[in-house]
Length: 320
Image 1: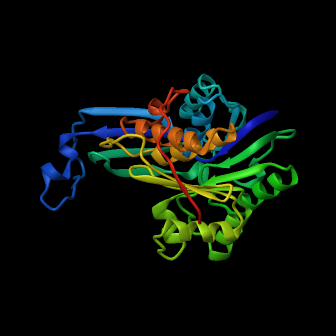
Image 2 (image 1 turned 60 degrees about the vertical axis):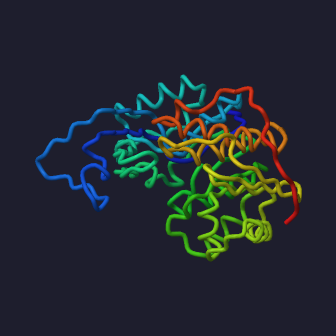
């Protein structure tokens, strides 16, 4: 099986509940919600959609015309069957999805408390339980291995790195959280990647609260990655390619409705364009336009763009 990109990460469902009775600004002065046992709370708006970092990223690639597969662990239940139908509809190679009845398919319930604010109830047992023994795809090949999130199991991470190196596969990762990794493990990950993408806030925490994006890029580049993307989906982004720093603001001003999946599609949108040998300015445009679109809806998949005709953003250049 020959693919262009394989996305690795969570595949599940997002369920959104929106109600006046769940807004702290209306029901409480201290910004808190109290849900009483045995009570029922009416919901005015409910949306459910397939999601998760792995699937959101894979769909972003597929909608740019890239042959994409997605490695993830789901349950063996009705939701898993629905995800396969959606993956097939999106043109993904869904045979890489690992169905195991040990755990149910992952799910996040979003209780919307205000615009771009929510309380999440997250079930992640399927993706958290994926291990090296689950990866049984003889003859599988790809040009780019994309880690939509860092695996909980460090041994699985090391397997993916080794597999990529042995087979001459480029490896990229969008890192929002290192999920309890020790510092030496973090250094191993960063030194093993060809392409690294991080929200600016996450990168700052990793590098001891360094706020200067240029200094973060210097430290990342010293560890190994030659392609770096630092971003804030609602404000700005900085890319480092071919020893040049590119910076831009957002594609358009957005009053976010929901932030779910925005970082997934920003990083994947940028990666898809660079994979297709487009300019850095075009890559940043595709990334930001996708994130802006996703922030305007509930349910990431409905906001991911399909090869849109976009006006390329103004990008400034500099050096580290």
